[in-house]
Image (cartoon, rainbow, N blue to C red; front, side, top):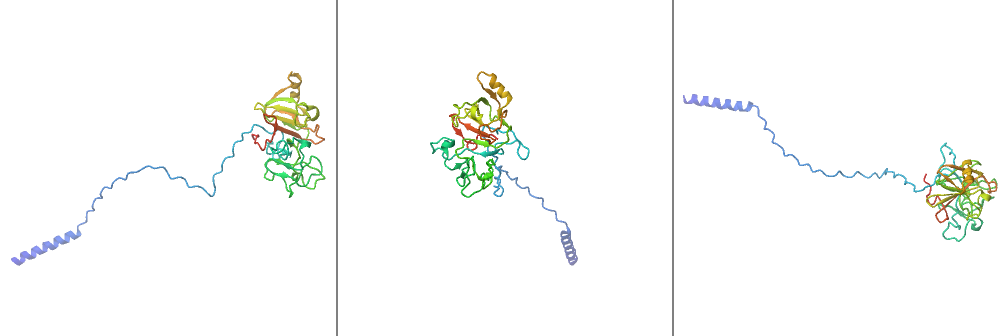
Length: 291
């Protein structure tokens, strides 16, 4: 009997061991994880684009003048101060605009050299005929960077093309090369009147000689226009009927027409800009254009 009991006991142990091996294991439930604390910070700065840097917008002009010529450029758009045809510039060399000079303008300021607002100098070969301009020491076109639409003055006797000569020696204004009867516009609002010879302190040649008229502007500047064929009919009528012989004009208004009166046959508009003290200034060098 003892042996039988031992056999039965051994049988049940083996059976229990077998059952434990075949029983599926119950997975241990996942332990809860702590919730991370989020700290909000400013986003990192955007990387600097060193290959294609952002393009800065062009600075706004502080000028007040608009183009004095009513015409279209080669693309059919109205000309501006940058696209209008210019044949002569203000001479900064040994003239009244030169701080190192005691000379005035014209014949009194000829030094065989012409300097313009961008620093270019014509002091090489002279043009064959008036107006007297000069090439660079190594002849090349002026204003290659298109600061203005410089077309120069042409003579069939010149050795080089018109843009190779900087015009002209002692000049007190800008010349705009356009055909007779091209409309002239008021560059800014103001009071227009015909200039007298005595009033014209630059050349002493007012309406009677140069067909010169002047517009005085509210900011103290004035603009002077020479060689026009005639004034616009409505402007002439107001000058005739107004006791003060003046006429109020708006910026961009047609006030006269291009001509050659007193210019020896050279058809163009000569424009001068004068400051509050009546001194000639360079509207390009002083950035007085608002276009």
